[in-house]
Image (cartoon, rainbow, N blue to C red; front, side, top):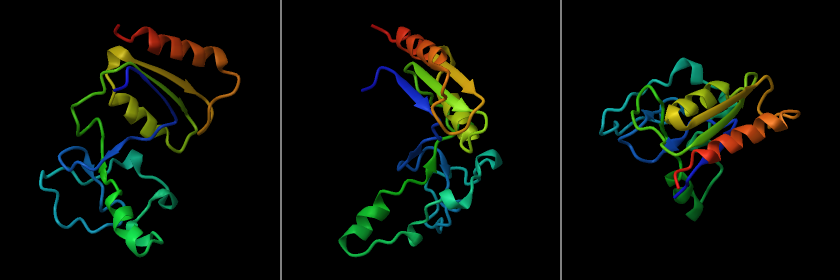
Length: 151
């Protein structure tokens, strides 16, 4: 579907599939019953633990009526992680992240979920932002990523 991707300050992805990733229900304060049928790991790596303000527990969502079930069905708790998942994104990818970003560990782990031979990384010294004054580096990253697309 996609031939390339550029991620800027991106966290690790989540999935509704229960046969992949880390079962992060406990991390989000959700009862982990029934147990994951595939026995997936349940411990979120310590370097990925974030400020509780960013967590979204469905019990805390303000939904009612017909929207409640649809909202809860859309919640994804399976956290993809390079330590538990062997599949790697095979399209060319570019990763831009700041060393002072709260999501820095997530961004690095997302990059590790992509194949190294088609992955390009630019780390800047800022936070969760598109870095200003780095236009040349960003253009180089994008050119590199797109030059790796198989035609």
